[in-house]
Image (cartoon, rainbow, N blue to C red):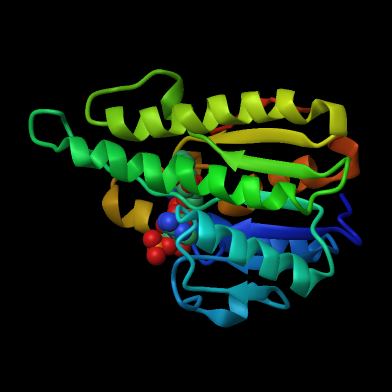
Length: 229
Ligand SMILES: NC(=O)c1ccc[n+]([C@@H]2O[C@H](COP(=O)([O-])OP(=O)(O)OC[C@H]3O[C@@H](n4cnc5c(N)ncnc54)[C@H](OP(=O)(O)O)[C@@H]3O)[C@@H](O)[C@H]2O)c1
């Protein structure tokens, strides 16, 4: 799948999935801007030739706009945005706080909304937006109410923006991972069967497809990418 000539901004790009998507997009021939809240990637070499933009809170609309504008300037324009910035909390209502609902809404949904709004000023007709939902948000379990509500928001945002942008041929899709095979997940669940978890590189390949010309007829799709979980 080729992304030759495509200019792609990726948020949450210094994290586990973000780094894999940066690498896959570069390997497919894209020019990449890697945006994150951390000041710098833990391993800058992992971002290859990507233009790194650190220290950005994407939930802040002014910071999101400045970062996306900087990405577009560095890449000579912008064809696509991948909204990966996000996080997870496990917390029951009895032991938790309503503040966690605000926090996860801000980190998981508001970041994608603010970055997408900023990107709209740059994306050409036929552009691409890819979001990260969660398979667990299809039916919540105990302790994940705040997380799945925020990711349900990402999924409804994906559907709504896909409809809004159909006239321009800009596609908006989301992948819904289950448990990704990351170092933090292995540490948190040492007895799990890691072989069943989807690898970051596998998810990245699906995202590269959604960024490619070949995915043009696909929009508003919420695609479970769950490995064997
Ligand atoms: N890991 C899983 O099993 C799993 C499963 C389903 C869905 N997901 C989703 O997949 C995405 C990536 O997960 P991951 O495991 O790669 O997480 P990760 O390693 O923690 O990477 C997420 C990155 O997003 C950054 N970020 C967080 N808030 C931000 C903000 N306000 N502005 C800018 N950057 C921000 C984080 O920076 P800081 O480190 O500074 O916070 C981090 O570098 C997330 O949306 C997550 O919810 C993950």
